[in-house]
Length: 130
Image (cartoon, rainbow, N blue to C red; front, side, top):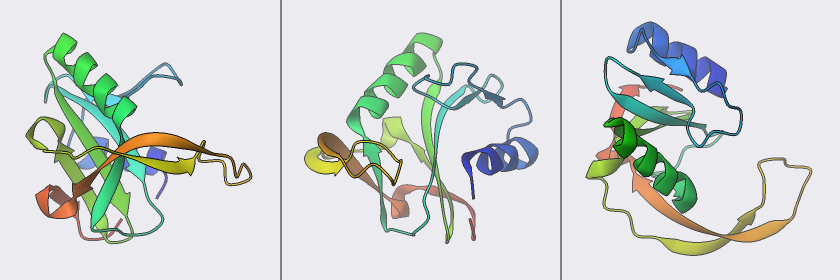
């Protein structure tokens, strides 16, 4: 599933007023005025029991959500479903890891990133297959 497909799924089935960010470099992917949600989307090719979030994305999503008085939400698709996290309800333990600098698989450069892991057991599962 691509991020566009995930966005369309959410808009068609859950949030009819969902709007994509107009800035391609924004630190969030979409928002819903009616649900008061500020959302980051991520699509995974593999399923994991915990899903990674970068601290800088988390911090920016939290800060912007507070400005708008929205709830920050992180939605991941995996081959086993679509999982939504309320980031204000998450107790994330942060750690530093050496990870790819970009999602461009041609670029093998790694950098240190501060990341946390969200257990899917704490998510709202929106579908059984992503």
